[in-house]
Image (cartoon, rainbow, N blue to C red; front, top):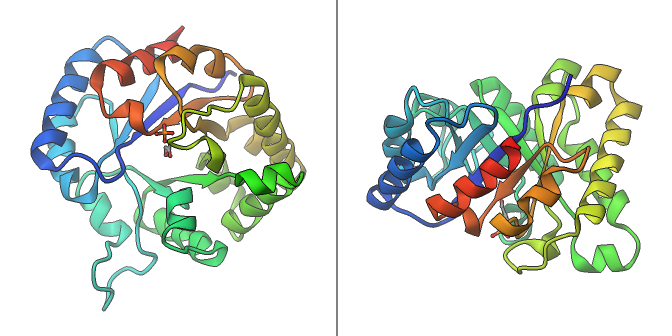
Length: 253
Ligand code: 13P
């Protein structure tokens, strides 16, 4: 059984409630007849209620960009998964490279956040990816499989199967330097082999692997047609309804 393509838009720190509502409204209209691709948008937390209300009953999922691992407590400025779920999220991005490299999240924290997502009833989109230095020194695959091993530690196999892994090479994020379809496919195949070697066979068959890093309307079809690329995690090009919809439609073909 082929995996359904899953395209998610990470809006990062763009679009407050009014602008987010306008973008969600445009997506709602444009995606009415797109039924063969799973779609999610990840607005900034403060815009989640507006976007969730706008996209209710549309089939477009709302994702958070981050969560704290605790249920509640004295964690100034943080949000629990349960709060995000209550606000309409069904997915949460965990371990984005900006969280790892700008905010210093380590592997243990990311693993705790993956567990917290399941506790709250959210499906994690676990981001992995090597830096340019790591790729140039020949360590890309070991870095990525190491991030998978620590990020997925302690989960049951059926939980792992419901995780989305987003392979986002750090050197491709926001740079316009997209990985070639062959480079991306090769790492996705490595990820699937690693899953097959570490979990029962159904996990590698079911788990979806998104590619992220300068996905644009002009390169989406060639990336999404690769056998192990099951979707995209889109940054900049998801901020505009027309370009995001065009990427989604590339996955519908
Ligand atoms: P860009 O598509 O802007 O390169 O961002 C990718 C990304 O980080 C998505 O999470």
